[in-house]
Image 1 (cartoon, helix red, strand yellow):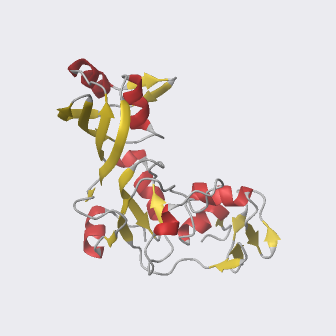
Image 2: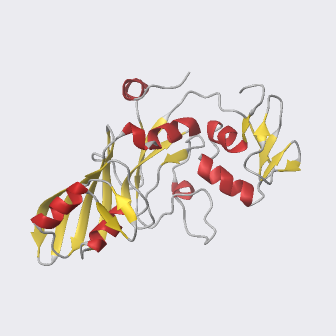
Length: 242
């Protein structure tokens, strides 16, 4: 931490409390105090010796080693620490014994598969950056037909409702009646990207499973199970900040 301190959202991310985005929501929800004073603006800075609390619980800067976990997210769970609609969240369903973790990116309510979790908010932010150009791979079941012309269109990138989506690799794996299975790969992953671009092509997604995020694979990990990435593998794949 510099003499000028660091923004409250960055401090909470580094402490493993929440991602920066979720921390800003927590500020808006009036859940954070700094030295017993309510934090009302995300531009609030934390300096050495300050006392930060979330929901009345003190927060300390993380000192545990950086850890990364693979989680097979079932569908029906929201990837957030607190859902205003009261829906079950990923963090409600994690097995006991884990440190406090944040997610690397998100999967929407009806999507399933590989979700990376870490106790280091700064690492989560690093892994989410589009500049990493990490491939996200998905298995997709959809109702409808995907022509070779449509596959070629996806490979060039498409614009849907004014939003430009980058190139997507798509391959038709199997067809049974009006249902098809696809493998799709993309580098960024905007909100509900696959559902929107396939909807643009006239397909309705009925199942969406993320099977890989960069070098990390879902493999045979059972639904609802968490598996830690070995420290050696983590060091090999990611240049950790000092």
